[in-house]
Picture 1 (cartoon, rainbow, N blue to C red):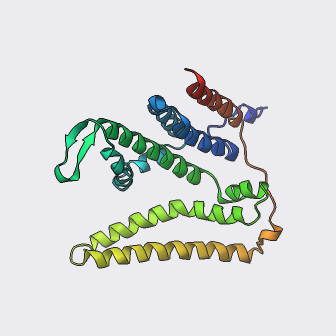
Picture 2 (cartoon, rainbow, N blue to C red):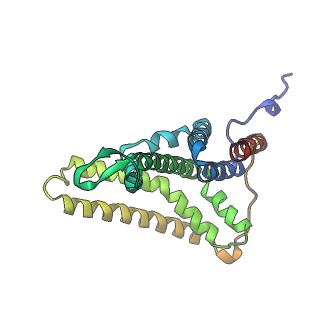
Picture 3 (cartoon, one colour):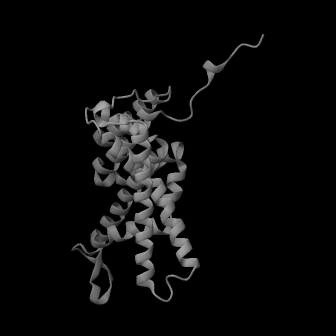
Length: 239
């Protein structure tokens, strides 16, 4: 007789509670870490993401996201200080500004990876349950739908952009092509949200009748919380 060894199975992914903690932990690392340790904090967050949702790291390094992070960090380049690069009429880039811009891009990268990994790993029902457990009836469903739409919206923007470029919509009339692009992406997102709302209505969903549901958890959640908490406290408190 072969005995079942299912109890020996070790989960490789955290549950909803673990993903929620990992999301908050990643944000706390890059937002609360002292400036000299921001690089170490970002490294810890990226290593954690590589363990549990590596796809989010690959998506964050796509050219459009790098361009967005660069635009966010651009104003920091022109902070006052000793100039290291002269851009002519645009001004000069200081060493302080360059360091500040790099830190801004690093924080934006970690936040993007954390949001992408969390929304791709947690079910919309579990996200809604977080708010229902806090007593915010109805808001959990709305936020859950919004977060669940992020991966769909990301894929829609890529497919629409590639289709528009392959058909030459950006060569002759670029402004008109961009207008069609934004209308298509917005219409697709609204249509998807409408389908979810109709599906919820068909199942007789009502904010007044909503109830909190227990969060999924695995055996990996507790060791993950303990280890991550120790690392965060060591980064913040150890001189």
